[in-house]
Every structure is written in structure tokens, then in C-alpha cells.
Image (cartoon, rainbow, N blue to C red; front, side, top):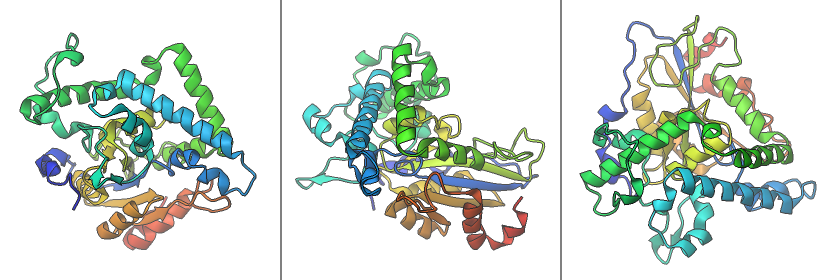
Length: 352
């Protein structure tokens, strides 16, 4: 059991349950995505493993430089706009291990886990919503509210305030937050990285849109866990959910920077850092409590593979090596549909 599991016990089924319409039961496909080395590339750029897989065809140093530029931009946005600068952690240790925040699994150093770089990491933004009293935060001074120990109700309320502001900024989008110069740096970096990775970023986003139903006529797309939709055809619904092993706030920032925020809402972003992917998958199953639901996990790591096996959900393993079909570009809805049909054979004839 993960160390953070006990702390997460305060998250009740009632808090994660979302109502459903009992009168209409269209099929609901829930795509459970990993982020790093699946929807985006970062760690493999920093470690040069992406470029090295091409056996000299890619400029290794260029890939590392692109990764470092992303790393610095993510850190800057976290600090300047998403309260990350208020985290109490030794700066030099943070600088040395900071890429673990964004890309890697658990690191134990000197017998002590250093995963808690973000002291107040939570598995999703709404986890402390019951502590938010709805106070007007327009004149609230987050620098003077003395967020810290103990982790009592008063401090949980302060964290809930921050989560509320973060969710609002996520809805706003970065173009309404950043200055023109930063937006240009961001756009240029995205384009250069997309070109370097043979359109991995843009093709992954296009596939994500397809999974949302946006590229299919008369197929509905939903962002929340209810079964209501404005689509003229409610026979088939889709939702994208992200479960990342990184901490929550940098993961939300990465969604914004890599243009995923219009396809994955902040309510559907989970951090498994403290609680593990199995627990996140269980919460997702409770949320999308639907009589005709299908789940499919897409990622590159052992943890989501193991969690998918425990949940008895199909798992599509991303393989970034050149020439492999389960990568971007390369992965198709037909392939994912095959994985669905193996686990959910009764729905095989429902494919559009």
C-alpha cells in the first residue's frame, strides 16, 4: 500500500460519485490516459532515450535541449501562476531532483522518499472542495495566509482556495494568463518539439480528439461523468481521463502547455503520486458508474499496466521506438477498438 493511501481515505465515495441518468444508457467509453511518454514526450528527451532509439538519425543534444526548455517553462509557470513557489523544500535538492516531479516514479534517497517535493500534493483538484466556504478571493492575499503545518481544517481550506483559483486558470487557458513574449516562446517550443518528434505531440492530440468523438459525425463527446449530452446522437459517448504519476499542479500545467486542456478537463486529471494508480482507477470506476461503460487504459509504464490488469480493463502499451505501431503517429482507433472488443465482446457489434 502506498504511503499516501491513509491520507487519501478522507476522499469518500460520495465525493467521487457523479450522478447518472437512469433513463438513458448509451454506451460510454472512458479512455484512461497516462501523460509522460504517452500523450507528451519529456523524460525521454531529457534522458536522450528518445533520440538514441533512432540509432544516429536524431540529434541527441537537440532533444536534451528541448527537454530542458520544457522543464524550465513548466517550472516557471508553476511558480509564477500556480502557487508552486510557496512549497517549502530545499532549493538545491529540488533543482537536482526536479525532473522526478514531472517525469518519473518514486525515488528513495538515504532511506527517505523525496517524492513529496510538493508538500500539499493531492490526487485531484476537487478533493478538498468541502473545505472551500465559497469566500470571495478577489482581494485574498495568498502570500500572507500562513499556509503550513498542521494539516488541519484551516490549512485544508487554504489549499482548497488555491485549488479553486487553479481550476479557474485552467478554464481560462494560458493565452489569457501569459504575456505575449512568453506565449511566443511557448508556441515556438511546441512547434520545434513537434517537428523534432515527427509530429508526436500533434498526432497524439488529434487522436485524443478522436477519442473524444470530436472527429466523428453524430457521435457525442462529454467532459464530465454524467450521461447528458447536447449531441443529436446519444448512442455512444466518450470521455478522456488523465492519471499521471507526476504531482498534480505540474501535471495540470503540462496539460495547458501541450494543448490538452480543451480535451481533458481539470476535473478529469488525477495524480497517482501518493495513492497509486489502482486507487485512482477505482475512483474513476466509481465516478463513471454507468450501466454500459467500457474502460481502456493507454500508457507506457508498468504501473498502469498492472493497475489495468487488477481492474480487468484493456491496456494499450505505448512503445515510442521508431516503426512500432503503438506510438504517435501510428496508433489508430481501430487498434484501440480491438482491445475494447477483446475485454467487452458483447459490445463488439456496437462499433460505429
